[in-house]
Image (cartoon, rainbow over all chains, first blue to last red; front, side, top):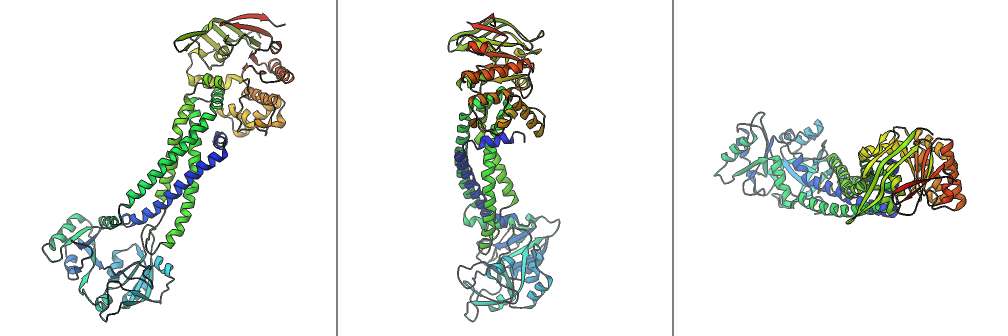
Length: 385
Length: 229
């Protein structure tokens, strides 16, 4: 810390140059924060996946439905503790752009399966008792300003009703939340029984099953047993862990992680060139001053440390400002996008990685000028001065 | 002034310039008593600055030994020399070589960063050094806000702040007008007589050399003593 003043003053030797460098670092880390948060949303389903939950879908496509009759056969399979089901409804609220996930489910078994969803007991009970009842995640409720007791019309895009209508009306009986910021509560759940009774076609089917593997049972063995059970039937199944399912679902949007990595890679490569150039110039301009420091008794390692610290300081100044503003923007973005891209979140892990990258980039940008400063000959440098 | 502070024995310094070997100092012997004030004069390229660099542990002899205050400099590593310089020797340059981004006080404090003194103690000692050179009221000024003479005084304060026994001055008045140069030389005399600093000063200026106790002439790598007028 005793060298901090020297490092700070040297960093601001050319104010405009330092400000421009800090600005480029700031922009790079602002971008890092935003892309990390968006990438996190795409990855969210994978991260929160429960290793003991398996998803059963049609072997050919997720779009194909599975018979409701599979439920009891799955439940009686060795190694299965509990099972529930859900289906994709695919409706919207008022306007087509207001889309979010709506699933007809069996209330009790669904909330038993997804214990990370928190809902007051009396609200769950009210949901179970009301055939046209529905519950929504707090993100959705906040986005549309819904309150318990509201009657919510949802326009179907797939599921017409038996009477030909496309408007499904639900009574909002509860609002649930999830403690894990990585998880999504941007969902609407409603009674499968009502859906089954009112829909015009495909009766007796569900979209997918979710099961919990019994303690001590091998998930892979359970998955194989189930798939074997339904092989050679009109609806063969594909059972996978929740993480694998989420991963394959995410890949439908392209390899988000790769895209994010490529963009950030290009940004940071440019950043290294800019800041490396700044540090090189800065050291070139004060060769004689560095020689004086060495004359006064600063050893090679101290000179190396002083120059490297200067480079890291500039990175930290720009980077922390960028990350800080990024965090604020992500807070707003998460609220705006909660309905159609839930889970936008700047995780502590991403912040730590960002700070690590600042230090790493500072070292990379400063190492060559610092080595030059460390190795300079006092006599030559003073003679040139 | 009886004890020998610095001793050079059979010191040669040869530089390789391309294919050519240039012998700057040739089997030089010199003893500098503790508390002495020596001026070294001589034409350019005669080896004056090289001699100063050897005494200050900035350079090592090609042959011979250099010892200062009992420390054998010629056998020390670069790291050991750095540590030794920080406490045993102060340098004063022709062009002051202050750091422009630091105030006078912070320039003077620089050598103390290498010690274990806390911040308060460092500032206290730097202030005392500035007071000795008569610049206590310029502590918060940057070098660009000071005259040449004042900058050199700050450089002298920096050289004495860690209380070294030896001060090495390379043309300390070369960039100053006569009156200012005399002020600086009188200050060096005070440091020599009242504070017991041993001073070796390289100069081209015969009037400056008169402030020293004795003058040595350096020519073609050898030294010749001449009594001060």
